[in-house]
Length: 188
Image 1: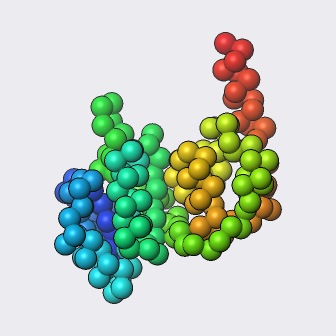
Image 2: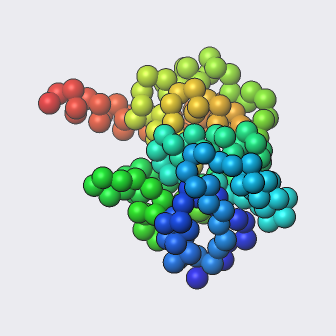
């Protein structure tokens, strides 16, 4: 059983149960998107002593919780899981993911810090990530930043210090593939 040093911030008890089934880990549960001040205090303390991994559900409320915690407690590690890997027919959440997918997400944590602008907006626009959702999501997957809209993608890439060359390499790896998928859909 893999031990995780950091404390993992999750949304609820089911997330904790799933993670503790596969990992030796401790969690802090937010109890949903209305995080009380005491929980934020616990997260701050955990960040100082052991470090924190934010691992919220891959949906809008989970993203809202992630952003709010990041604003209150900067420097936390981030783990993202694809929506397709964390869902049932009716629900989406960390608790629905399998062991391998959870291991993958936790082994590719990223940290967002304010590093200034490493990629200009013009460079990001030229990359094709705006208006090409499949390409943008492929780039997000490459850098393990979770699928997001163009504005959030631009912000996260800069917070990770991604260079224009790194972005160009990621885009070139997927651009042709994303275009061929789009052409297949349009021809149907």
